[in-house]
Image (cartoon, rainbow, N blue to C red; front, top):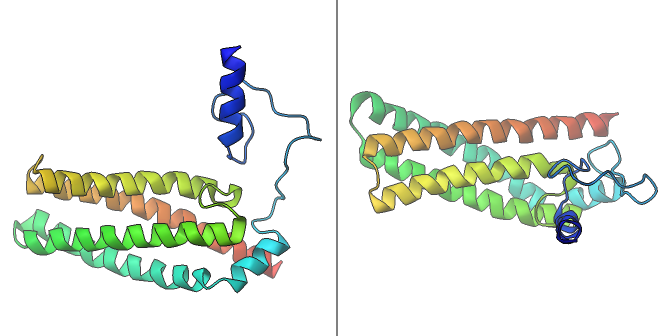
Length: 187
């Protein structure tokens, strides 16, 4: 009985586009009752909402700004790790990168709500959102370690590099999704 209640509760919040992925105990719902997602990224209504909202422009501006901040910060972090010089500048750059990341995450959630009707985990961007939490978590870990002095500055910078590696993967996910949307629109 508890398992059935648990499965029902978990199923009500599970919004992964693939049925039965998370806990594998429940068989997929029959095709008639299952909400099917079209094989394309945006429905016509979602595409109209995407094109009409100002948050699309905000995301379009913030994404390259974040990438530029990332490149500068990456250079400063690597410079510190290789030379031992410029700790304050490298630290400040990682904090700026974290601030820009949080800004783009919040505005991205608003964009997702405007386009798909939910703030996070819309089926079209489910895995990008999942991985974004890892990116945020690693940036947050850097800030925590910095503020609490739980690790040396060198270890802090290696944590920043781990956060940056996850950011590159996540940014690649979004670039591939943008490319898919353009190809879809052209076709």
